[in-house]
Image (cartoon, rainbow, N blue to C red):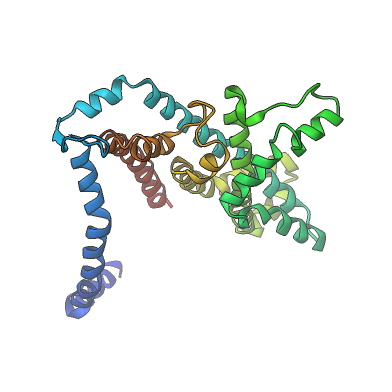
Length: 302
């Protein structure tokens, strides 16, 4: 039966579906090759050149010199470490908070809980640049609401310059990112919890399964795929995050919040070293491809 179905589908494709499909896909593939392929190839070419807009002499081929310089560049490795801290730290905390909120709101129903869910989703609707400026003003040393609350509660004795201290700037940016990202996980995990079959939950309750047993033995296994896919998506998004960090700290103080995307921007549009910036961009692209392949593999496991 299965063989006959596959054969009939193959007959339909050979009967005329494929020519129409090719006619529709070819222009799109050609457009993608121009829009996506050309910049990638041009970046690879630039990464092998000593090309600086401020230099008098024209660009010259230097081979792998930019990559050798990149290996010896401590700022590059610092930016890579900051990217990992910002990306994985933000995603880990946001996943945990989103999971806790989804489980708590799922256990309690009623109209009030629906209103609470709507309020919890509000940060996701706020543009990222607005979130960055909002937290930037909240972190102000004089007049910022965070310092005002901490001073009034007696937790600190004097105002803290959150975004101007190297050891505090990255955690402060991560807090803002977590606030903006948690509703995404809350929404996705709430939908996944709603998809758990009622029969499974009722059978567990008949077997006198407690709250924690339901969570760890039934709900979390059902949420595994949703957690995996959403985490990979947000890892890719945070790896490319520019707006929030630039609006809050511009990568400072010094290089304490400089991630790869900030470092590429500084090299390309502040020092105009397009050859070296392209080499960093190639490494950045390769790392993103790794996460993209993991995401595609996770989709195939569904």
